[in-house]
Length: 220
Image 1: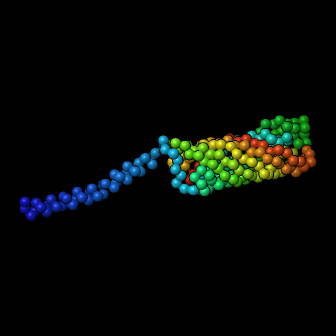
Image 2 (image 1 turned 180 degrees about the vertical axis):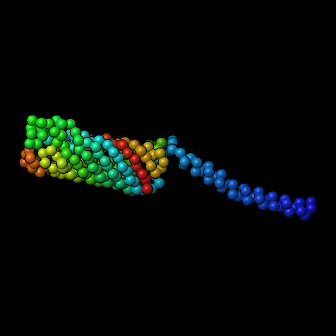
Image 3 (image 1 turned 120 degrees about the horizontal axis):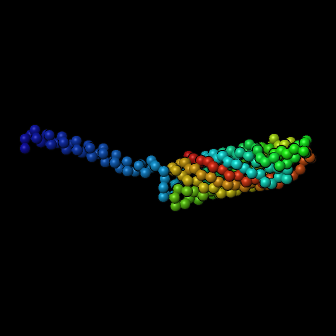
């Protein structure tokens, strides 16, 4: 073999080694990351962080108040922090835009019927239990205490419901490790303290409400 042939062979050997060096990790990385590009399937959810932000939109039906509890469209924002494998500290802020059935006498005009439930702004805090399953579906159960402000009622008898107990159940399917979508149902109940209005004097009543929501959850 001539000196020129040995030099050419050496150059091809170096080029081949470089190709193996760069192509090997690229293929390995491609095989590792490719499953993460699609929707999760057949694996339990493994949260990538300890912080959760959620937003839900739904409908609330009030059922407790003798003179009407707030019913209508409900927007809920939520923050949670994981301090245990299954248990998260949870805070929920709620805003209800009231509308409902006109089944009660209007304030100042008993001959007409009005919706008297009004609007509600609420804040709840407590814990949320999140139980993973064998697929990326997570069952969630909140256990919260809260305070609900009641206002814009037909009888001008606004007030406050405190302490309220809030619980329910929901499910989230995690399309990615960091984002889930799903739905939940909840119940709120507790004493409500109303000021005197155009229909009556101040009074204490029972506050009760049921809500159904759909939304999304993000893990940070």
